[in-house]
Amino acid sequence: MSIIEPELTALKDNLLDMLNLVIGQIEKCKESIHSIDVKLAEEIMENEKKINNQELSIDRDCENVLALHTPVAIDLRFVLSALRISNDLERIGDNTNGLARFVKQNSKEINKKLLEEFRLEKMLEILSSMLVGMKEAFKDENSVLAKETLKKNELFDDFNKKALKTAESILKTQSTNPKIILRLFSIVRALERSGALAKNIGEEIVFYVEAEVLKHNKKE
Image (tube, rainbow, N blue to C red):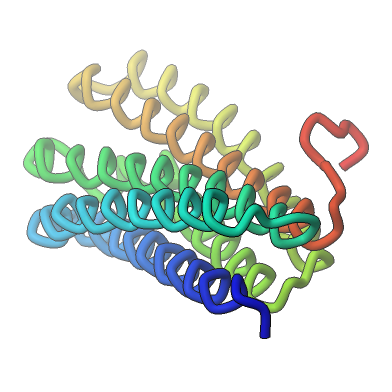
């Protein structure tokens, strides 16, 4: 075993832990939205600190590996990918925090029917399945699974287009507080961005495993 191996293993374990944290946040968001559960929303907001701390820890670990061991080839790609993946996960965590804050602040003005019209639970379900797939792909160094999973991001474009039409329709025909409708639409946009971040994670896994760059590749 090389000197760098234990540190890379620890870094991988930390990143898998962070993935589990963010997946857990998404699942809690689904439940919070489904039940309009303020206590669960508060728990999500509190857990955001753990995700931020995890990102900082991974950043420090990556900096130490780069400074002390000067990794090359696949080891270097792994460290660079770990840095970018942790940043993407932190941003997804920010979006779940924003959704939880919305539930907490507007629990008395929203209802299940309104939330269902914007299909937030379905978007969260797809996002969760993407990250679960990415976790397995990262753990097993499975670039094929990563490529298959990142394709799910295409589903978010359709959700976004339909949400715009839904928002326009409700604003014209219902007496719902316009601020609530606009906030719901902004949450859909945030979840669409989270889908793009999950896709980025898949691209980083492919880069790490195969040394193949998928970013800005129209065919992929």
